[in-house]
Structures are given as structure tokens and as C-alpha cells.
Length: 553
Image (cartoon, rainbow, N blue to C red):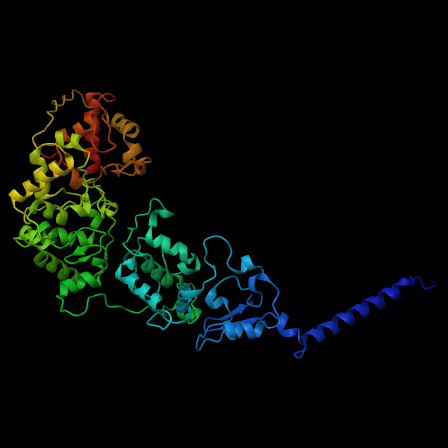
């Protein structure tokens, strides 16, 4: 006590040293290789390096279902794991192939955190989704569906809209898929492929006619698209040395003309139909040489939206020589035979040419039921005219105007002309069939509309602009592009008023009548009680300004 140091301090120091010695002794004891509990409780701590850099794995395969491991775990794991050839699971660990959160010991977390499923555990056939993270994309035993998914990805023209690293080319119309496997799980990838609008209602991606199995195969391939594949170093990735293989999309077994081969190689037939090949996404090209002028075909390939505003078709990259050869082929070879109706009747085993012509030429857009909901309707910029249940529209429409629409088509839309494909008599037979089978009235059952009153004064531009914002912009948009705040509520969608090719065929009277009396079969209401005569004509003038199309006389 003379020194001032408490007496218990020595006892404390002694106890601390004794505890430290006990701790060191126990640590040494449990770390001995010969100790029987070592294999039971040891958790593998692996560092994997497949070329891209070390990946630390702290697996949970010692803890099945989150439980403590059993004494025979090591032997049981080796015995129960399937043969994976050259892959050494004890060196590669689990999460490289199965995903999951490698550092987690909790069973729920280790199987992948909730959310988009990017790290959800893969098992069974789904393990193919990991193969091309370590192996370069190509034919590979055990990854046949993932390889098939890559080929389907190209055959369906996915890279025309989406960029994907390694192809050397790629679209700019959809999200970049280069690292999509790091962001989404297999189930979400499959859903996005089969039903693009499921999670994004305004998606313009077509719904491709893929089976669940085909969509799953594509998802396998996309799941392997990660930022840093194990077989490549960061320097190789940055230098663009990670390449995806080229795949010939042309059918084998027959000789193809240069232009026809381009239809396959440029992935046109991923969407379009051409003779027996049908992508079931976009209009038929089988007879386009008889329906469109050469200049139109060439211009459309260069800039689709210039000819059909709002067209979802991307601009397909091709050289000037390739485009010239493709246009030559379509303009000269994609033409209709003179005896088309007879060939169709013979093929179908029936003598109903009008019905066969409708099913071959019209139903893809207007539907076999005549309601405008044909198989390719969702992918068109303009809704096909509905026949079924739309008698009022056709009672008001002049018969010659309807026949002309079939003969020459409707500019600014996907509706082509059929003058060179079927005769005037056949066109009239098809129209009569439409009236009889769908509209349900006689072709002579017409409603005489009163003449439109002439305007007496020209309203100021500012007044017309305000009127347009108040009466029209909710549906047609402030700029008139048909994408107003309420546009998605209506089908058919509101008309794109900036479509100059479409409105160039309209007279001012036809536009004014649509404003005054509405358009039956659409959400366009009559404004006769809401607008004065001068206001109706003022809005007609506004539409002329938006479309930049002169009055058709």
C-alpha cells in the first residue's frame, strides 16, 4: 500500500494473462489437422482466379438449410455432387456456378437477397445460365440451351434494337444488355422477353412469338452477360477483345439469291413475313414489290419514321451496296403472281376467293374477327380500322373512298395498295365480304351528312393555340404527336397530327368534319356543341400547320 498501487491489480493482471493463454491454447487445439471436429466445422475460404482476377468464396455448402454441418459432411458432399468433369467443385466453390451470396451464412440471404433475383440460386437445367461466364460463347456440352438461346437472340433480331458487348454492332433503340445478367434474375428475364409490357406498360418492344422454352433459352444466354466474365481480364474487356461468335442466319439446303440472303442475314425476317417464313411481328414483305415503289422501299430502309411516323422498326445498319441489293430483290422479286386468288383457293381447297384473299392479305392487321386486333396490330404505328361493330363509320364513308384505300393504300400508315396484286373486281369482292361478314350492313346503307357551314372569320393564332391546348392536347399531345397525357387510355390511339403523308390526302372539309362530328369507332368525340364554326375551322388550320401538309383537292 506504500507504493499507492491497489492490491487487486496484480490479481487482475494474472487473470487476464491466464485467459489469454487459455484462448491461445484452444485456438491451437481446434486448428490441428488431426482434430476430429476440424472437418465438421471448417467453412471453406476459397480464392478463385479464372483470369479476370481473384474471387473470394465463403460458401454455405457446409450448412445445408442453414443448419450445423454433420460429421460426415465432407464425404456426403463429394458423394452427392454430380460429376462435372474437369470442374473441381472443392476448388471452384459453389457460387461461381450456382450464384447466391457467397459470404452469407443465413440460408435466406445466401440464396440471393430479395429483389430482382440477380443473385438467386441456380440449380438443375438453370445452371446453363452460368456456363458462358467462364467459357466463351459457342457450342458447349452441358450448355446446349444457352447456346441455342444465343442463336435465337440473333435470329429474332434482338441486337438490332439492343446493344450487347462483343458483337461489334448493336442497336440504340432499347436498353443495353451487355451486363443484364448482373441486374436481373432468370424469371424476370424470361418475363421481359415473352411479355415486355408486364413491367413496363409503355414498352414498344414487340411481343415475339416465343415458347416458354425458347424464352428461357434466351434468358440463359442473357444471364451470362456480366460486367467481368471470368475468362477475360479487365484489360481485355476494355480493349474490346471479348467477342461473340458470328452465326449464319440463312437457311441451309438451298441456294439463295443475294437479296434473299440479306433478308435473313439482316434479320428482316425476325419480324416480317416473306413467303413461307413468318416472323409474325411486322407487315408481310412477300408482295412488297407490287405494293410499294422502289424509291419508297429504299427510303423506308434508310429512315422508317420518315414514311410512317411513330414506326417502331429500327434503322437496320447496312452498307450502301447491301441496301441496293436488298432493294433490287424486293422491288423485282417480291411480287404477287397474277393468279394469286386461284392459288390461294387451290391451296386451301375452297372456292371462296374473297375469303382467301382477306385471310392472306388483311387478317394480320385487321384480324380474322375483323376487330382490328390482328396479330401484328400491337406493333403498328397506326391502329388498323375495326370493321366489326363499327357500322356508323362505314355508313358515313363514301364507297369510292373505301375502294381507293384498298387500291392505293393509306399514306403514312402500314396499309399498302393492292392495285397490282388483285383486280378491281376482286377488290370489290373483298370489300363486299367485309360489309357482309363484319360490318353487318349493305354497301348501299349510307348516311347523308349535312354540308359543313363555312367560316366567317379567321381567329388569331394565339386563340387557336389556346383552343388546341384546351380541347385537343390531352389526347393528341401539345406537339400533336398523338402522345398526350390520356393517349394510353384509348384504343385506337389518338391520331398523330404531325403525319404529313397521312393528312396530305385529306381535304380541309374532311378534317373539319372529323372535329365537328367525331370519328365513330374511336375515342374522338363530336365537338359540334362545344365549338363554333370559326373555332372548328381554326383547329383545321392548326392541324394543317402541325402536319405541314397542303389541302388535298
